[in-house]
Image (cartoon, rainbow, N blue to C red; front, side, top):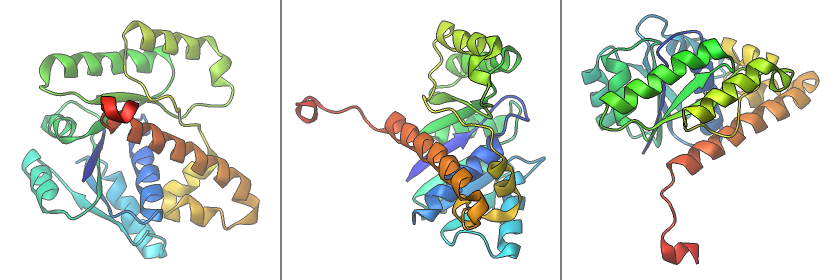
Length: 230
């Protein structure tokens, strides 16, 4: 069982959509996936699952549950037969955020590439390192526009990542219209791609998410032993 958490100290960073994109792509590959919605205010993931169920688009191997307190989270983690669990946490510092981080194999921290967002992100990493017995946080640059990488704001954000030595995944997630369509009730990017006018966009979008999943897998894989390295 692999546990991924999606967390930030503030809302509006795109963590729920990113959680759903990864969960959907994993479920489309046949993995048994459980999303635990621990965002007590928004419950965006559960609402998406409900919309997809009504639309007949929910991947068969993807299910959802809600956790309103750490005890709920622990119970769900003990009782599930899912291969991969994704935990979406409310954008604030609370007990559920702590429980999700500690339970996870990796906690993804989606962040936009600007100084204002990065300041808050640095605070979260510093807090986790100081206060938690384990803090497997990895930053993901999210909603990156095509022009962003050439801007001073983007370069300033990258500089902050390096200065504070934040562990960051190498793949960043582009801002894409098909991600917005997916977030309504599409169920999967593959389903959107059946529309010939969207096929090329979806191919690029799925490649983006698959690349990120590859980064996640590499980040949580144990380092090779001396014999394996030979």
